[in-house]
Length: 132
Image (cartoon, rainbow, N blue to C red):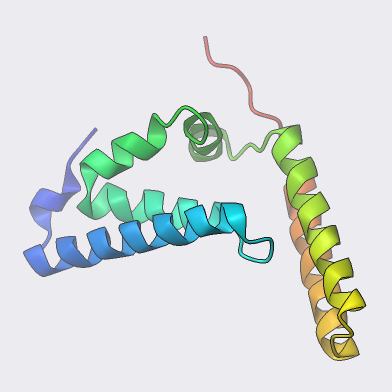
């Protein structure tokens, strides 16, 4: 792995590290809180850590649970069927939870459009191919 942090100003490196740790923390919270997404935060953490925290970047890539999914996304832009199913299910449950909570119909409509767009994009992604 190339360490691009050597070319950056120390303040930039610190900013990338703070962003990486913050995004990773938010992604971890997303595992526990149904309306907080995990994946976008993990991807931001991966991007920022590649620029300012190479050890954290490597740790994310080799994590036993998240590493294979992150690597499949990075190399193939692929998403596993399990992840697709889970993401679509959570969006559906979240939308119905908001509907049951009597959220304004405009917000529900906007979220429905957003969730359908995200689900369509996810379902269009290929399955990861095992590398030999």
